[in-house]
Image (cartoon, rainbow, N blue to C red):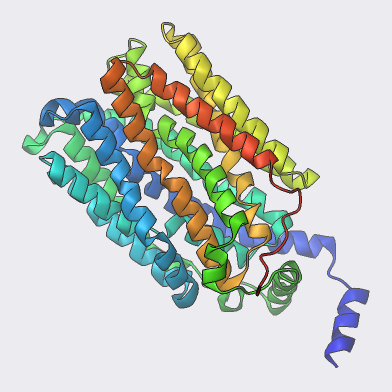
Length: 441
């Protein structure tokens, strides 16, 4: 009987119009809300870059202290990433994403009470622990709804949050820093952490009412729509094996993916944490003006990452799209140093760099999700993201250390550019169609 049903399905597949309408319905239900979640997440992660404009003077921090405190977030993130993602796979995205967002929103607001390097390190570490599992959890969540040939574009729409958080967060942070300083006896950077932490808590509560764990739980889908989505996910997973977590963590291909992601994230957090400082060094001193200028690279990057991912989905080619984007990002960083004396040219170079760096990320995630499934996918995606986000520790600390050593960010920017080139070369070493992780030796 099952075979006959399968034959019937092959004889009379759903119309392309119905399938496209179903995926459009899913996209409008999930992606805008997930995008909003990631915007507030990323804003809470990197607003320390704007706080730096005032914190270092107020608290007498050195560049190295700032770099270490910014980066130590990712140590907590690294240690709790895999357990968090495995828990999400078992208890469901709705409950776990809500827990993550509420806890990190509270801790982000607590950054306003930082008064010493030690407290700075502790709160940033706890913030990393709280947020661990959010991004890889969403990447895993998308595999429950979308087959591989649709995922890069959806991941790109979701990851435009990184750029949009810069578009929104730059002017917002600059405005708070400039106009809220002294209100109620608090510095502008204290108000910034408080105001930007509250939305995470509120949206975390909203997650409980908006997200559905799986296709079967979606009351807003008809029976035919659920059947279509389920069939496509089953077909997409046919070549994948459910692999024990230990075997996934020992797989060389997973570690190669982690190395590639590390290389690109070095560039991402170099831009995220240091863009306000680099703009300031071109001669701009007003906090709001710095915030407005910092929105420009992120705005262009929003468009670039969607267009690159869409083309990668349409052609089915991933590696060259990723690698070329990385090389473009490296070129932009180098040119931002060459043109550092001219604000207009430096901003053009930083815009090119941001476009290239962000365009690598959504298309990259189509590589590991092509050969990972089930609990193994939860662990593998988390490991790759953990390794990659260690760059969030290395990048700001290395740039800060080099700035203290040389009194310039130039050498740090060259380091980030070199990392992007390495990431592009490693990507080209990946076989065009990654094979599934073997279930047993």
